[in-house]
Amino acid sequence: MSKLSGKVAIVTGASKGIGAGIAKALAAEGAAVVVNYASSSSGADAVVTEITGSGGKAIAVQGDVSRKSDAQAIVDAAISQFGRLDILVNNAGVYQFSSIEEITEELFHRHFNINVLGTLLMTQAAFKHLGSGASIINISSIASRITPANTAVYSGTKGAVDAITGSLAREFGPKQIRVNAINPGVVETEGTKTIDAAAAEMIKQSVIAQTPLGRIGQVQDIAPLAVFLASDDSRWLTGGTMLASGGLR
Image (cartoon, rainbow, N blue to C red; front, side, top):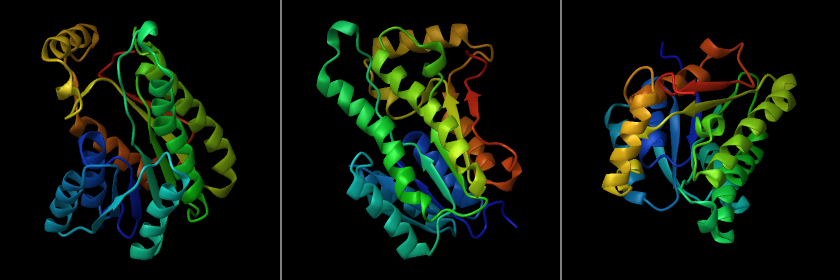
């Protein structure tokens, strides 16, 4: 039997990148998956098509996780379609490199609304449906530890996600609901490819030089960790931050 057979998962921000990879990996282990997206319906539909084409179960659900009504609607869709909820992956997030001179109120609130408030609102909406053995997985970042220059706002959001992970693990522990975070290093996704080519290459080479395993990450390096944290294999783990950075720290 697959590790997640009979389970239902929501993955936010799952139309591309790490979220898409996690959605596919959870489905491959038997979970029915709600593929949430904010704007890319075509990307989410492609993920659903790949999952269902392989015999899995998935639906695409639009929603802005930073809006309480949308977060509730995403969870309601999971319950309506699949009847239960066992796994929540808070992956939706944004990032932008900004020097202190470039930080604006708009940039600050966009990052904190999606990366932090979105995590809280999705968890709040999901909580009443989660039972013993359920798993919440927050996608944080190694940036919360290495705090690179020009990432004060983004790194701040991920530091908040790490703190939220620990606090909710204590709050939900008595109900046997586990809360953990995955903290990836630089991972090659559609998003990283949109950065200016010269800047992207400079960042890539700098990261590789500092990474003991000598490369940047791939989506397939992260998705299996989400499967592990979603499954009973990690039943004794909660409140943890799993560094997935090739040794960069």
